[in-house]
Amino acid sequence: MRDIEIARLQKYLRAKFDNNRIKLAKRPKTDDSVEVLLDDEFLAVVYRDDDEGEISYQIHMCVIEEDLPEI
Image (cartoon, rainbow, N blue to C red; front, side, top):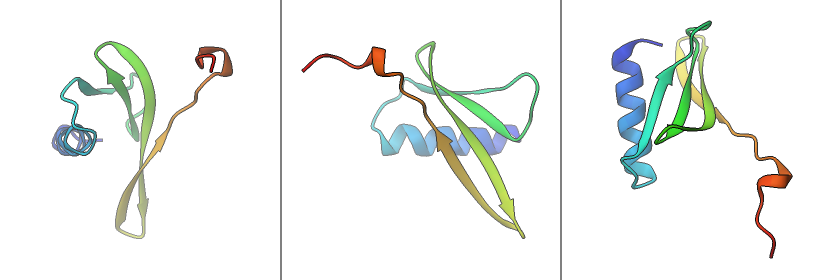
């Protein structure tokens, strides 16, 4: 993903979730996705999809059961 694309996506996510602590970071071995961080904690990966010129972004977030609080 290009820097301008990452910046636009980060601005969108910050506004959508009303949280300026969200950061997007390039992944070292691939250029089709970025990591989503909250401060320095990894949250998810955003993948860029180009389907016949139509660009979309998919967020993949995995939550481990042991991280969930007790109710």
